[in-house]
Image (cartoon, rainbow, N blue to C red):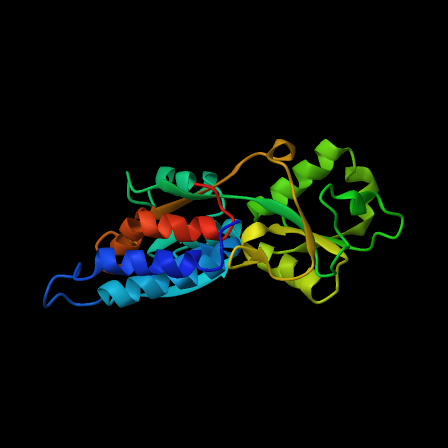
Length: 256
């Protein structure tokens, strides 16, 4: 994990690199951005960098990737879509709703089993076999890629049948996190990025699930047709590919 100063250093590097990037007299723009719930916290930091360095602002909506895909298909006014998978941005390209050639992977997510209680989850996830295991939260696999990954983990551990009666489903990874945070679930399958502060676990206990138990969660971003001429939207895509922002994303536990 990164040390607590990593994000601060990354932000400073990005600001220095982008200082003066906006042409004199250029007008600041704003963009509507749909963001997968697991990426909510890093997106706030990225939006702040964008505004400080260019004057552009982002109006951020967070939720389940599948729900956003449906909304965009039905005309929701988003300029950029940061998904928790690579499939839905690719589908939007095929649907003619995204700008060709703008899609790329901005992060690879990590799934964890988490409890808000210290010591409840060990580094092997043994709690899943504990006789006193309570409710187990996971995200809706139809709309949330992290939910799909959770189901894969239970399958590959041979625990799906035993755990199914205990499952409680959130509509997004954000709601899943809240189930565990509020004690409505004993443990939950959430994103590592939701649990870190300064590269360290904020509270509770967790098992960072080995990649062998689930397919890689490759998260893609794409510029939507509505944002084709939006300077804030295009600036965001450029920023996501900058070295400083990549370091910032890593500090939340993602791989690139």
